[in-house]
Length: 501
Image (tube, rainbow, N blue to C red):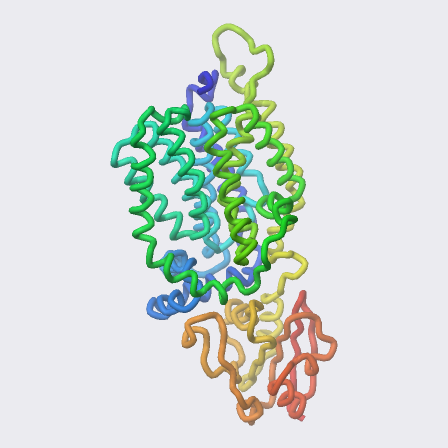
């Protein structure tokens, strides 16, 4: 371990984790409700606001891996509502906790200066703000990944059964938050084995450490077994949009998780320097970055599951490595009694680098607060379409969506923003009845449209001629019976008002 830092960090160690946690919370709360929920968040809203029996049926047919998060959000929305801010607030709190825990972990592995700088570096990353403002489980999984690793360090240092039980509980929480994050256990396994052999400075020399770690993990996996057994049968429906992994995806990962190519590259460079400088202290955070990435990538070559945001939980460990090099002392430190000014000067160069990372990420910070869709150029303006329909609808109007399959979620988007909307005339079985996120439409649309004088047609994409863009029997029925009275375009959406000829 490094020597204790001088000045205010030594006199107020609580600041090591409190400052990064508050900074991350502040960054996450700025503009948290401005960007409209995108399709993944609409799935969270749809699941969380269903009656509990319907929600449980959903997890039995689709999205079981997110089921525990949906249950959490079900209770949360009953208390806090379903506004964008309310939906995202749990993620903001989880990411703030992740930053604080990252600082504690870095301080434990190095010193307080490294802890403070690692936590602050995590706080300023655009990806941190992006997923702190995302109503999805990634921020929670990131928090639990750092917590589980910190509890592992504590158990290795003093291997009592209550500490191993706490570690097992954190692993259970990690698996419930995001099953793929259990790839972190590969890194924990290696650290537990080398610690038992006395090689790691994190632990006492005790050959029982690895067996005890294994016992704790097996206990956690027993609890997670029902979820582990259910997920494989749902993968083909849940991840049908994911392509097999390619070598280029590894190079793009830093930009994907940091939400900025420049900032992601800076973090990777700092982490590499920190790993070289920290020596054996870098073993744990280094493995927590490398092994999950490599495991998911190799698995993704055969089974499509490589999605950069799924590996967000590795980012804090890269920041821990970066904190080690950011906390490097000046070549000729002053002698004599430590002073608050000396303590401040010892972190000033590192703070300058953190500030640089924050400045480089400002354009991406501003962009993610305008839209959460990815890629951002393909964001669907559900709110704009809902405002158009809401301002111009009349009693007796109907609404038709195209396409209805896939992941556009046009109907969910309008349902979120427009509580009183035209009748979904083609819907025979809705999302709750089907226990998924889609609708079964009327097989004879001409009969279902009988007697409807005005139809709102909502289409994905920019469609100069909306009627010709609707495929199948629905398109035939609309073209035979209606003409386009008015047409509006919103980002990646077309809204048309059809009137009966």
